[in-house]
Amino acid sequence: MDRRLIQTAVFGSPDSDDPALCPEIPEELEAFRREHAGVTIWCGTRFEGGCGRQLTTRLYTDKICHFAHYGSGGTGRPCGRKDRGKDDANHLFAKAHLASWLRAQGTTAEFDFPEPLGSAVTVRLPDGRKLHLHLDRNQPVSWDPTVWETILGPGVRDPHALIQRGYLHRVRFDDRPGGGRILLFGTEIHGRGTEHWDTLEDIVLTPEALVSRTRPADVRTPAPVPQPDKEAAERQIVTITRPTTSGPRRTDPVQKLLRHLHTDTDTPGKIKTAIGAIEKLLQTDLHPDDANRLRFALTRCLRRLEEHTQRRQSVMLQLRQKPTEGLYHLAIELIRDDPDVPQEDSDLIDSLTARLERVRAERQAAAQRAREERREEKARQAEAARQAREKEKAAQAAAAERAAQQARQARTEKVRMLAPAVRGALKKAAREDRITTWPELRDKTGLRQLNRLDHEEKLELLTLVEADTTPEEPLWSTLITEDNDSAGLRLHRDICRLLGRPLPVGDMDLIDQLHAERGRLHRRQ
Image (cartoon, rainbow, N blue to C red; front, top):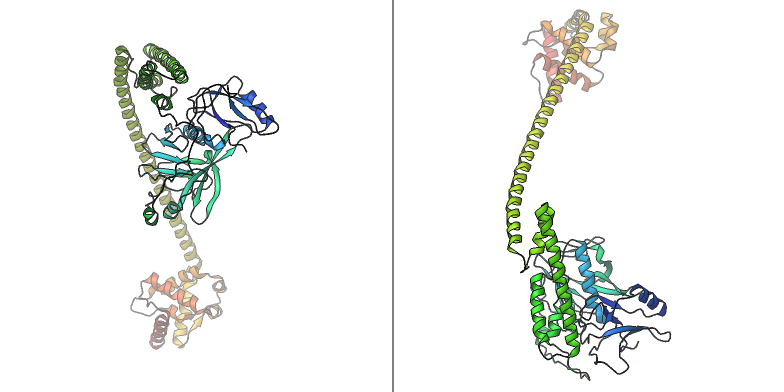
């Protein structure tokens, strides 16, 4: 590729920062011309050595298409641009993409292009943080401790910082069909490299870090500024100056003033200051091109002030006729840093500010009362719900108690007539010095109902059997054994609990107690 061909420019004016990239093939250049019909293209002053002259497009089929200066056939002022390829406008494309990205997140910022032009982009956020995009691969990275995060451009290397920080944020640029460049964001991890690239739409600026929507773990909180490499610090740095055939780049006040002038975003106070500086410069001996650029900028500044004044007057008129909070805030923004605001407008704003503060205080008080009422209502509802739950639980407990009582009564009625016969059979077993079982009791008494008794019914029956047994006497029910020892032990434990008899904890102690009581019954008869 012929590096002398101009591939980058700016739209609109010499001092614009709206970048343009010339398509390389004829079909895309034709589309580019149609898309930007009526828009002028310039060798912008925000390029290192940019001459500020107007450019045109050149279409070729035997080499790449490119921009060219008007009067490049031998007339006109020489251009001092050394780098004319795609990367020459990376700082402008970066600024455009970053500004759009921040606006999408509701944030505006101030941008600056440090010297030499094209080497870096500095972004100052409203909260005081500063981003620094380092693009010059031939210059060492400046790790400024006042910078919140430093991002490296294509081909920029700093192995020492990568080792110390563990990661480096990076950007790269891809060409977009039809002209323009796309900015991609990635994170180089020490030992892994840059594995993924995101569009800026997938990156979120938070108070703590740059966060990726697709890879939250890979985009990190800014690390401390790397410490200088001791070994590298001991080396002697030799600066080699490359010879040049063109004259030195101008650093005159014209270029400095126009570089920092932003007529679309600067406040009226800044624009008035710039107008004064421009008028002073126009009284000096200037090159015709510089004078033309200053007159162009002066016209834009005056038009911007006139438009701002007309808008401010319109908003203030509406505010007097029908004040609203929206108009008030708009007026506050319009009078900010405007030295030409009439006193009556300032008095109106002061009056509305006091009124708005009273209204805001009343709203806050009303909101506080509403919150307290909601809390009280919520507490009342919670108490009512608690009482309802308690009432429901009490009703359920009463119903359960009634059901249990009815079940006990039913069991008592069922086994009441069986108790005398069972008591007699147990006494007979005691006289005969033996124990018995439920089947044997059935056979001895002829009561077939004993086969159909469940645990609760047996418990109720034995309670009736022991009705006349004194606390000092052994229980007749100890003479009954079960086929299942655990069932028999359970039945005896439950009888003892109902009758208030002492019970040992372990089963072996309970079995010993049963044997002892049976012995007492046998000896008593």
